[in-house]
Length: 141
Image (cartoon, rainbow, N blue to C red; front, side):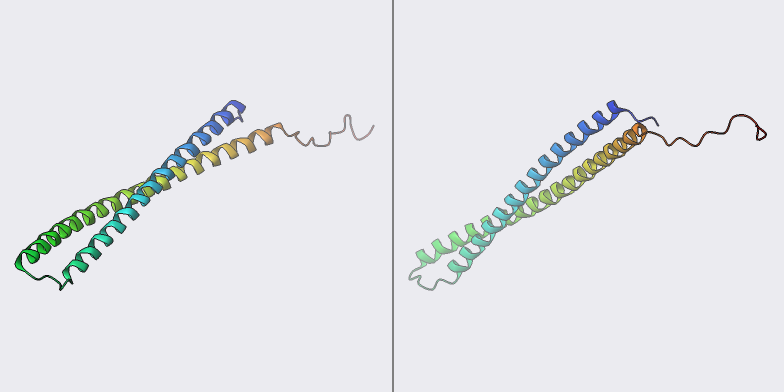
């Protein structure tokens, strides 16, 4: 295949495009990981609150017991919802990491193609080694 400077320019543009796409995928993956960390922290704090309220022993009447039980039930429901959200965020973060890896592979492939094309152009522009000329005439001359 003939080395083509226009093809090299196209490959370099493609490489830049793929690098930008990779940066976008990296940003999305980082956001997904951040959301996951926030949800895990929220779930842990909710579980801690529920444990703290379950350990309370200063309730003096049935009304207080009912209020605490109702509050703890709400906290447990909130904890369950938060756990489910964290699981969804985990799967989303995993998906974003896969997309980031794919974007990196595409960028690396474009970079490799551009480098091969650049080498091909450099080789075609280099001056070829000229072999020694054959003598003209016959050996008797």
